[in-house]
Amino acid sequence: MGVCRRPFFNPQSAFRNPRWLQDSLIEQSGITAYIRDFMHPRLISTPYFTIYTFGVLLAIAYLSALWWVVRGARRAGMDPDRIISLCLWAIVGAILGAKAMMVFRTLPDYIANPSELWSLATLQSAGDFYGGFLGALAAVGIYFVRHRDLRFWPVADLCGPAIALGQGIGRIGCFMAGDDFGKPAHLPWAVTFTHPDAARIGGAPLGVALHPVQLYESLLCFCIFGFLAWLARRRKFDGEIILAYAMLYAVARFFIEYVRGDMDRGFVFGGLFSISQFIAIVIIPASIVLMIVRRRSGKLSTKAHR
Picture 1 (spheres, helix red, strand yellow):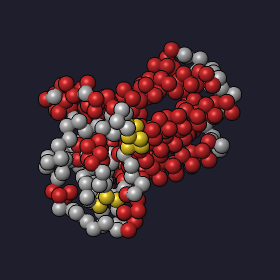
Picture 2 (picture 1 turned 45 degrees about the horizontal axis):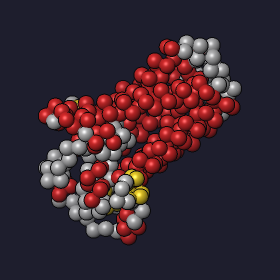
Picture 3 (picture 1 turned 180 degrees about the vertical axis):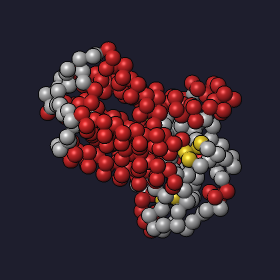
Picture 4 (picture 1 turned 120 degrees about the vertical axis):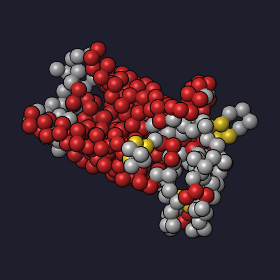
């Protein structure tokens, strides 16, 4: 999930606009034009300041996730203040991790232009989701080391649906900004970005009908959220919900990557897989193994303290 994460974007670059984009101007359908009317990168624009739609939706995503976790903590008899502190650690870790992964994916560009590390575009960027996920895990790990009386798995289970909810909202923000755009598509629901901010902020090609991949992922995340909320009432062991989230999202992300069109997101094995697909390949079996181990333990607790 990210925006403004392409400070090196050059509209004339063959890398940013590969031939499959240059040769893919497609006539807009009625549905495309209809959806396009609701794509507004700037929510409020004045001579003194601009409020971007993505930033507002990202804030709503974080607040919604926090609300869900605190709601669950109260129902489970956990101390909501400690859970809020934990969430704040996770948010800071997610922001730092997302930016770190963003820099890693375009490291040669940052090495060539080190000043961009502190540029406004980099500071405003939301960065990479998996980087944020790993950063949040690291921050949460530090928090649990400092507060050893907290139980990891019951608290983590509260976070699974919250993460999916936040992602579902955040991806709508990506769509509004033209970020993480899809490949060209000859489909009735293909979307065409025309606002210059979509190219400047998100790097989306203008005038090209594309898969609304951000909305695909948003819909899948909302479905995952609904399923996890249902599963949470029937969970049989601690860790079931967060591990189910990790597995389901990894599967969804693996296949979504095939219709992503932003070529700067990073690839491995000579372009066989994107970095996100490679991470998903690691997470899927790891989640399954952990679910088997946790299920065999047969432990279920709603208490956050040991």
